Length: 492
Image 1 (cartoon, rainbow, N blue to C red):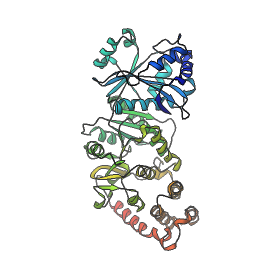
Image 2: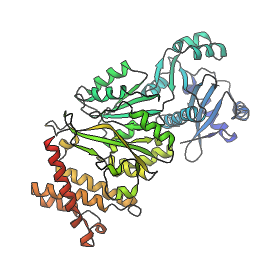
Image 3: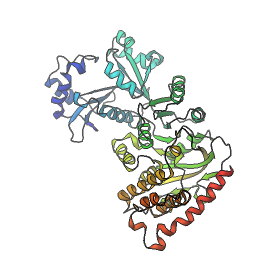
Image 4: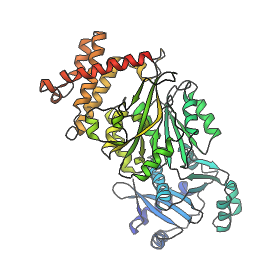
């Protein structure tokens, strides 16, 4: 999907949707008498540089016109505009309308400098209402926004009855989107949400939560907070379990901020200035793809950290690059504060690779995808707590749903897929040695030699030779570090 200015070749396909009685029956304007000349006249007279209106064609990858998306009655003094979109029937259900809307709203905020965009829908237009509600746009009473309400009343486009009877929606510019993934987090999610709500910042932020079909009380808690804070919190509840990477992608595509940062439903923040500090850094340093902070690792409900990531002070106040990644230096990916690449179709396609690379493991892919966009700056800031939750008997988290053999297989498959894509530019030998250390220790404990050997055999031969630089030797120091780390954790 792309947006471009309208051109004469679009007129016949524009007329197609105008003559589709089912599509236009509930629209405010009457299109019944429109003809091809009217379409061409509109295209020719639409002033793309106007101060009050912006009309753009929605196209597919072959530049075929799919519909029109508009910002109307643009008011730069009060920084708002009215939104409109209409598409051909063949587009319905494809997601193109949603992507076009997101891109046009991005133009409104990032290019035109507007603060909010509103639009109305006839109460009879069930299809449109379902579309906007599904995509978590907020219904409002337009009278609660007197500047917009008075402008609409004086404009003459709508009758007073239309203004009062139509259902109105609003979207507002957001600096930061905090996206939260939840799955059986009934016990912890209130603490996670409250830690976001406690932020002290001049940046406008939102909390986007995507629940992956939890079967406990998580969804009820999320709806409770959404109702209490409708201007801050938007919730998506997946009807089917999507898995970690797909649910993360879903949450990110809901984000409207210039920056996004993640927080799991069982983690929480311990610095009320996190957003202010990290957004401020990225504003002042456009060359970085993201900012990272230090993360405390805590077991279950323990209030004492057993470790910090990154652990070494020498990693602070400096860029983290692909060269650091190749050295297998841990980075706190749980707290990454990144530019919102998901605002563009190109960015969405780029990060959608994560779902193809791994069905189970998300953060390692994210790190590489981000680093290929630019360096990450590591701030001397301890703002996040990652709760290391013990395996539970009901198999509600990753650690308890899968055996050690399964988890070893998932991580080696992840590396194999990344190596296939980027092996020519990135040396993954350190990460193979790291994961192999986990596998060998688990193999010794479980004595499942055959199962682990089959997985190790899938590692590319280039990482197995020459012998003294291969995973067969390099796994040993990583194994020692694992043992020391587990000892510290067990004492916490």
